[in-house]
Each structure stands twice: as structure tokens, then as C-alpha cells.
Length: 397
Image (cartoon, rainbow, N blue to C red; front, side, top):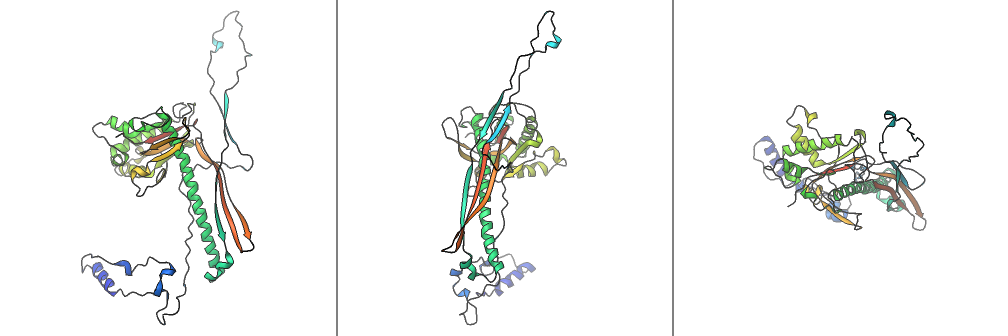
């Protein structure tokens, strides 16, 4: 064991704590151990009497913390048999004259005309799948532990790490489902299918809050989301407009979905996902100086730290951006957009269904180990006949 003499630093610490000296640089490299692989311990692996005997392990700690994930909750039903998800919809019929109040003498009123309903169906029949393989060799690793409890804890740690990895991957796929809806909405809103010009204007489904704000207050322009988020007036302006959409989408309309279908989204079916940085800025700038926070609060939303990734430093441009390829007229359209603040969508507009997690096992009798395959299946879908509205802040350079 490596033992360090630290009397000098503890004396200096005492003087700092008691007020006998100014705050000075403290070298903590000999106080706080950051750990090392056993192969790199060298003489520190031996006791300090004969310096020939290897120190025994006194306590074993396993890094075994299950990760619950943080993706928005869009998980839907599962089913055991069959494959296709069928979604049936009926169009609203048109009105016609009511002859009850326009009776004419000698007029024949036809009542046996057949009017069939206009019904259509969408079929979703694609599934994504991946698996993680891990080998377990119990007999070969027993010598590293003192008892069966430690051995079981070791394998439990490995099992948890596999499930944590799968949770991260499924969370990412959920976010890609949302990102695909965002990209399609932006592409559709600007009339070219590619999203070009999204930062030079706004639309009813892809709402450029920063463009609208700069039009409203031309003397207080911001050039990007990062600068706008520090402006309390922009935060209030954005909150106001997003709250309006929460009410507007309750009314039957064709304006809020790509398919141009008559749809409405009641409050209990509205799903709102918002960028966490914007939500925190709204909390600080909207709520910190008011006694009536219910008048300035954002609509209830789940928050995400980023849409696609954090980048290397969590800068606003990285966390608010998407860069994806979507299906389009050209069989693969690239949509690059930044400044995305949030997305409101109907509960039926996107989701994850028929998710199936399972483990299959095979024992290798010759080498005496188990192979486990951790498998994940799920169907991720977008329905552009349902309401989807994207809020973002972008200005063309």
C-alpha cells in the first residue's frame, strides 16, 4: 500500500480554515486517489512490512446502477400475434339542405339515396431490432471472489450494464422518431420538401418564434436561440405563443397536420416535448419576479437535454439542432435545422409500439460458458395525418 505523508497540507488547510492565512493553492494529488488498474500499481500493491506480500482486497464495490432513461414517454400497446398496425379514419361528411323547412306542393322527396362513408386506412408493418451478445463464464472467474454473493453481484453488474446500454439505445430511437416528425413538419411547411428557408420565415405548423419576435420588435433583434434565451421579453413572447397553440389545437382544424386532415387534440391527448435549456430559462426569467406564476408558466411539457446529441460541449447550437435524412420526393432528403425549442403533437401522431425485450441463452459444453443474446424489437411510427407543431428560433444569416 502506498502511504503519503500529508502533514504539511493539513497544517496549511488548518490555517486557511481558521483564518490564519489566505486561500492558497492546494495539491490534492497526494490526498484524493483516483484509482488505477492493478497492472499499474507497481510497489503500491505490496504491504509495507516485508514488501513481498500482495495486499488483499478488503471490500469489493460493483458499479451496478440501473439507468431508467429520459426519453419522452411515447410507449404504446404491445401485442403477441400478428404484425400490422392498422389505423382507420373516417372523413367528415359535407352538409346538405334540410328540406323539412322548404316543403313544396307536389314535390317528391327522395330518401333512399345511399351515401357511403369516406373511410381510409393506414398500415404500419415495419419493425426495428437489435441485439447485444455477452458471454458468461462462472467457473473461470470464481477465483477472483471470496464468496457466492460477490460472484452473483459481479454478474448482476454485467447484466445491468447491458440493460443500461439497451435503454440508451431505445431512448435514442425514441428521440429519432420525434426528430423525424420535426424534420417532416419543417420540410412540409416551406413548400419545397427540403426545409430550405425555414430560418427566413414562419408557418402555422413550423413556428419560428424568433422571426416573429424580431418582426414584432425590430429594434431588439436576436440572431440565434442562445442570445434570445437571455431576453425575458422573448421568453414571455415565446411562452405566450406556445400557450396559444395549446388552445388552438383543441379546435377541429386542418392547419396543424401535414396530411391536411380535420383533427383536434384535447388537452389530455396533447404531448409537448421541450428543450430543457429553454424550459429552465423560462423558469428563471418568467417565474422569478412574479407573484402569479400561473399567468406566465409554459404549457406542461416533458423536457429533453438535446434533440440529437450534446455535441462536445452542450452549446446551444448543438443541443437545439437536428441533422437527419427523411423520406421525400427525392428518396432521401437531408434536413438540417437548429434552434428547435419544442414540439407539440397528438398522442396518436407518433409513438413506439409492440416493444419486445427478451434474452436467449446457449451453453457451450466444451468451453463451459454461456452465451446470452439480449434482443429488442419495436415499431416506431409517425402519422402525419395527426397534429404536429414545431416551435423553433432561427434567423438566416
